[in-house]
Length: 333
Image (cartoon, rainbow, N blue to C red; front, side, top):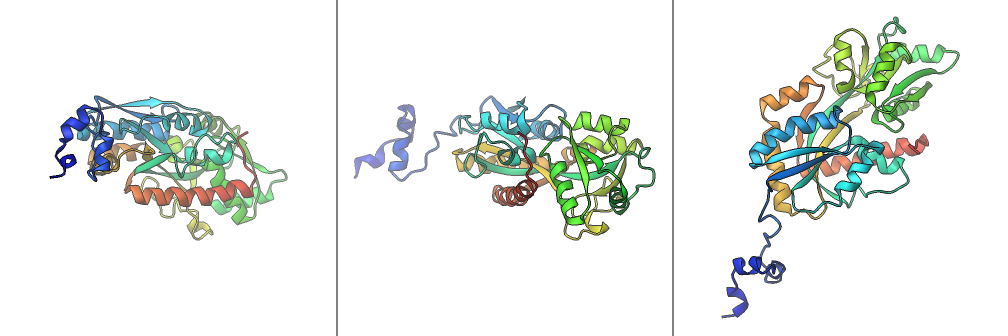
């Protein structure tokens, strides 16, 4: 008998020779022998209270329960998510560090020149976690007659100087969505970027700016309170939270779909069996009614997709919105 084939796996692992298993044609489980650890870290490259952070905190508890461990949310905000993401990709690829990823971080490499990471190579998709609908909202006091997208466009075209609109920042998803809409509709509006959604919404309510293309997390409470008026939603279908608000597509722009989203990532090189286990448990966590209700209550929707489906979506959005960035010469520097 070939002596190499009777070497025990326990001996190989104990001596740190797990690599020998692969040379024998046997699978190596060294990476996941201690997975998950006592605490799994979930990096959120955005401030506390935002859509990505909110989704991370809602899902992490249920996911941790299913994995039999605790998940700690670690906020590392800055530069549209690129700072925290650049730090995350340097983490050990052992499944004990994850990242709740958002659209701004996907597009950040196109907006900053530092090239902090490569979205094709530096991480592995675990699953899509949530969809984040977008809405065009106006200050009803400043724009009492604007109750639809077409009336906003008519108002913008009639203005002697470009009508202002705001977003959570230069290169934010709301900014890109409005720029694409302007190109399609042949009208002009002046972008007034803010550093974050909260100050933009505050000034929108206060009357400093009249309109905004925002995610629902930032504006839904103010729409319900009557402080803001939603005139269109960016998704391809109407949103159950705003059932009477027509989509952009319904208001003269067939095929228009601007839906932000977020998903769970692992560092490149994480063992496939760990990624598949995390994805399977996350699917079950997102099927939990309580989790779905909590996500929906803040303006997001549970939206599980497999690692492969998430990867396809990531590449398609990187290409689509990258074109908007290049065509409009948008930069964050």
